Length: 84
Image (cartoon, rainbow, N blue to C red; front, side, top):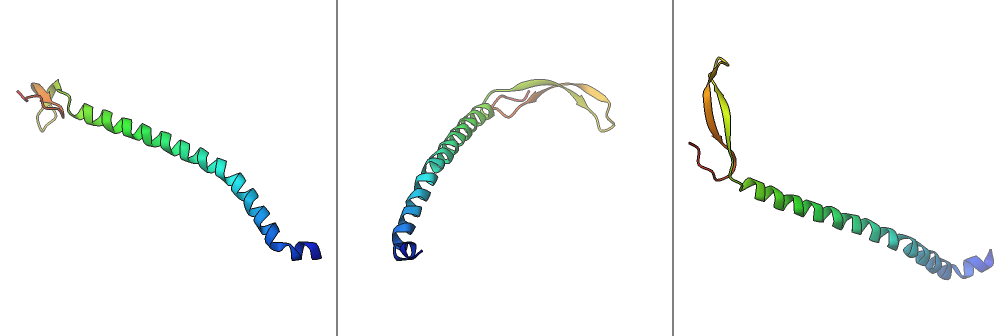
């Protein structure tokens, strides 16, 4: 027991080195997963912007306040198409 107490700084340094050797690879794995998720989010954002700028016209049934069909209309989507 006397040996451990007299060499306490060396024991602390050895245990710290083992902890760092254990945690470093796990940290790299977590960061790799985070980078992959960030890349997926960036791709989804670009796709969302592209879709929001697409031309879009849809044929839809128009309804009056009583819920009865009032006729067909051409509905504009979120893109830059002209509503006729």
